[in-house]
Length: 384
View 1: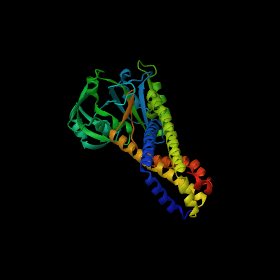
View 2: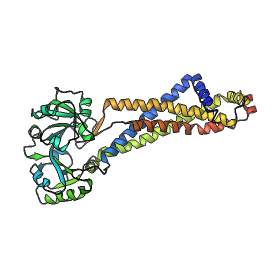
View 3: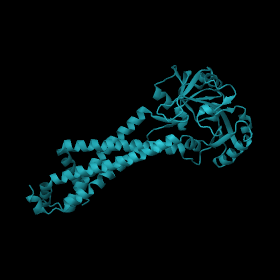
């Protein structure tokens, strides 16, 4: 049987080519289902990346206690001095955040105001793709845009844009291995404080970099204890835990898409099974002729299974490739409570989608293959 496999694959391709319209419609149907599946898997993967704390995560977010939207979190900037004194704290940066929409949205514009001289010290992972940090430092209304932010809005160095009541000039486009950095606009802290009317000396949050991940809990407890009796008490959490708790609406929304993925898988399974069953019913005499030429029943079953697997694989390739190109070109970003999550596919999703499509095609063709192999030759030859 293994020796006959290449010949059976070639025969299956010829059979599919003979019924171009039916094969094409099946492939397109599978492609639509796998497009949805790949999109859902990408969203789920982006959510896991944004919320699951890893061993190398050393960032804490200090926020106003019992506050969520950036507009309601107001902390004195002088907290920075006290936070720096805590053992294990490597770096602290005060951040003023202004967003155009605090609820769940597909088009969130987030400004992050930071001290110009502290940005590179706090975030050395930032890489400048165009423009320069020096140009950003030299102009108070300048902005450094994350690459996804710039691509989504069609902005480049030298452009000016206005959002959330803030007008800035693009001084550079940056990239980072931290998803949040690629989806925001960094501006000068004092400029954003004045532009948003928050007032000098008041910030939204502090981002704290710890020396090691195993110190996060202790440092968070010490920070909150230090300001527990102040007029503005704090709530300190790891950055990804902060995202998971604050962006509850967003997480529920993305979580619901898992059902869409399950529905897409079920639709693909049913579509391929129906198409292969029609093939089997329409080729009763042909299968009988193949048996008279020496093909055993199991070879007929393998032939039908190969056709189903090829339909699934072809549709999967079209659908997954379409989803990859669409999500890569559109740079979709979902935001909630001032936090953003970029839906960016990777090659792992492509490989998984192809494997799932192949498996679904093979699984859907098992019953039709078994049925085709059980029909007696005499009965098949007498069939009309």
